[in-house]
Amino acid sequence: MRIRVSREQAKRLWFARQGLSTPRRTKITRGAFVRHLEQSGGLQLDSVNVLDRAHYLTLWSRFGAYERAEELLDFRYRLEIYLPQAKRVYGYYVMPILYNGSLVGRLDPKLHRDRGELEIRSIHYEPGFRETRSFRRALRETLEDLADFTGASSLVW
Image (cartoon, rainbow, N blue to C red; front, side, top):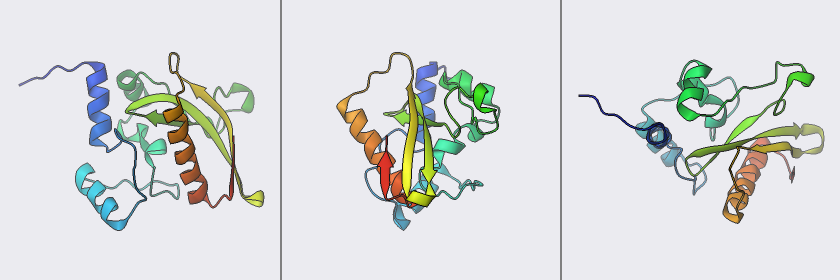
């Protein structure tokens, strides 16, 4: 039996299955990690030293080819670290921003280890996205978590 769903329904289903459709409400604990493994049915190990929030980097690898992800998610994403600076559109280490089950933009973080600072060098929103207070608060909390995870003592953006 075949079931037809719209592109938007497919995106929401996929994010929900990955555990990415709702904001994280607590710090990662062993129990939360085990529940996530049970829900997602697997563990993906990446070459980056990340346990929590790894979906920023691995989202596209779960689809295979970039084009397939772009078609389904209607969102073009490329890590630009290997491009010459003049050819970069969004930044060196651009990361997608997922908010309320939608990809709403990209940001370019830079960790200055020597001064313990996480700098957000740029933020680019998708056409039509409007920044709200709740979004700004969620973004700040997520960036503070990232700063804490990387050992940065300050966040600049």
